Image (cartoon, each protein chain N blue to C red):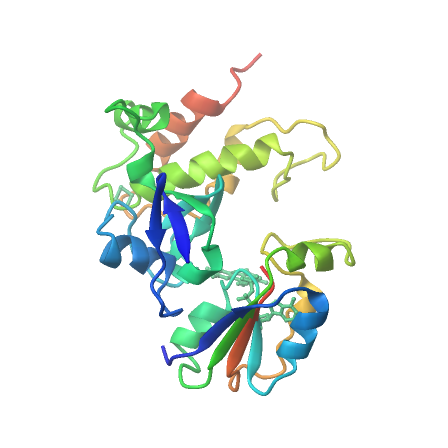
Length: 90
Length: 168
Ligand SMILES: Cc1cc2nc3c(=O)[nH]c(=O)nc-3n(C[C@H](O)[C@H](O)[C@H](O)COP(=O)(O)OP(=O)(O)OC[C@H]3O[C@@H](n4cnc5c(N)ncnc54)[C@H](O)[C@@H]3O)c2cc1C
Ligand code: FES
Ligand code: FES
């Protein structure tokens, strides 16, 4: 896995600001992304950000969860090949 | 930056790439937790985070800063096996034993999910106050933990003995 940085965002607003940085990727439970970073696009992730508890804030907006730590509606990465940093919302 | 592992505070490695599984096995030499697939598919690496089950192979150690991890090594107390460990022995809940630490940690997390009323795919009444740990529920909820030796019947019996309500 290529080196990346990891940061916990302070709150939702901070997460959005940091998440818009080039190459940033949000991190929920990591069960998709960590696997992906090992395999498909190991060279492209450079930063991770996390904000503990934010998933639960976001969870309140939607009506159901799928058993993972993120919601279906939030799991639509535009590109699986170009993340450079990760924002952990777990 | 520390993480608590079986009651001991441990420093988290500065490299954020270190998975929780590799922290346990390679850095701390707690080899009870097993690496089967390293991609979230087998459940051999299951540990408890503040009582909830997670697969440690897809977890970054840094994600769990300040949290309390329990592995199979942390279940026995004063040399006495956890009742579920004992039940696995009595019911032949394993052959090679590779999946066993994950099965046991997973079962402990699973039972808490049932107590919290978290429904599964086979739960009939989603609004029920209490969910009974029937054979169907138990098998469904443990389906993320594979056993290459096919010891499933013993695994189910062991978990049922310790946690399922006796049939009325
Ligand atoms: C063995 C296995 C079997 C699986 N089987 C199925 C299956 O049958 N059906 C199915 O649907 N899925 C399946 N999955 C996928 C599973 O649903 C995902 O791994 C899980 O939902 C990812 O959740 P996570 O919180 O770990 O996300 P992460 O891995 O942390 O993130 C996934 C993606 O979402 C982005 N992201 C995370 N949080 C947010 C947010 N709040 N806002 C915007 N973007 C965000 C990340 O940047 C990343 O691109 C399987 C996974 C495994 C490992
Ligand atoms: S090693 Fe983690 S699920 Fe297989
Ligand atoms: S006892 Fe061998 S894999 Fe389960």
